[in-house]
Image (cartoon, rainbow, N blue to C red; front, side, top):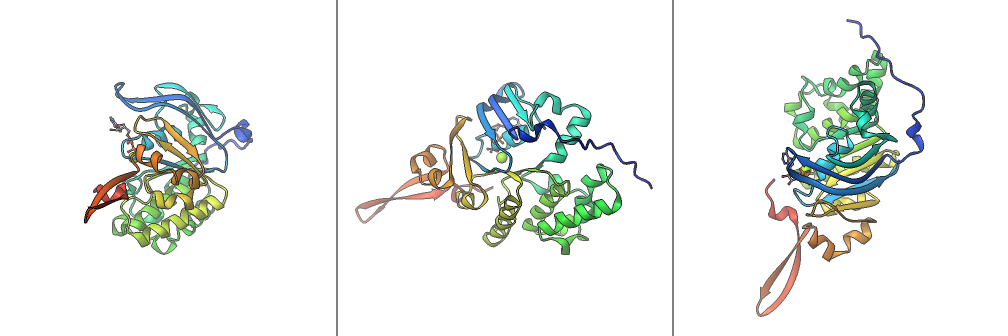
Length: 283
Ligand SMILES: Nc1ncnc2c1ncn2[C@@H]1O[C@H](COP(=O)(O)OP(=O)(O)O)[C@@H](O)[C@H]1O
Ligand SMILES: [Mg+2]
């Protein structure tokens, strides 16, 4: 079978100097009624590593889907890579957009559907119509970045949770996007697997990619981001700052439902503990 190369525009996009994302008053309602985001103002520059921190239901996944162009704002304006988001919907532009912006879903099973890990990682580059040696180079690089070259002939269902996550990320990295959106990459991983993944994500950031990682795990934030955007339970940006300053602000974290204050009684004296949300949730 011969693969017809698709026309890939090579001229530099006028977006090069613009912010990667620029949102003003963005709202999103599911089914026209269920408010998921309620007035988001946010600007993300090229090369920034941003943690999108928020409790369950605060709108993190919805915001990532907006940034990826899967859904469009119900209200407000949004520009991505210097283009109005309405333009992302049309054919070639959408095609080019998804070479530049990649979303890794929380559930790796959404992203892995082929017989082998290699086929999943090669899917995007093959869709682009790249020459065979280029497809191979993109896949090798993505598999190496996620340190899973040894798993390339495995079936996705034979992988552990952490390996699946890495395969799902590799399947997006093989398109060599400049902007990577990660939805709760460390959710439901054991501690060792989690830190392996955090380290791989950190290396991607150091490689110059723009990274936006949604999470509610405070401990990973300083490693994967130099900026934290906190989504509040009112589905707006509650705070935007450096990890050290955000993570030190207990009142803010309690308000955002990211830590939970428990008052314990021990022999007549009381003291309080902060509890990471995870201890209270079975995901
Ligand atoms: N497909 C959907 N239909 C209706 N409401 C939804 C849908 N997906 C999410 N929501 C609602 O939108 C809000 C934000 O959800 P989400 O973006 O998934 O938050 P997070 O990722 O921070 O947990 C929640 O109230 C959630 O119930
Ligand atoms: Mg989510």
